[in-house]
Length: 87
Image (cartoon, rainbow, N blue to C red):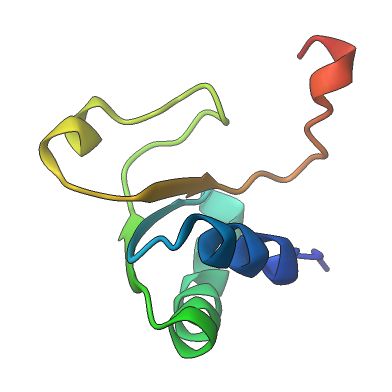
């Protein structure tokens, strides 16, 4: 069971007044995509896209997104990302 931390994502979306969001998920979390999209859309009104391509972590930003106008990319992972650790 994963804590998707949707509240953090929703706070960031509202804080940035983001209207178009892209969500990047590893394969193991893709079954949660509908739940994520529905919750974000309901709570923020933002249009949400799911990146269904390969994902090797937060450092793997799809180059194809350069051709799409999005306000915010949210990249979920299986593990805690601790920026203080240098990872």
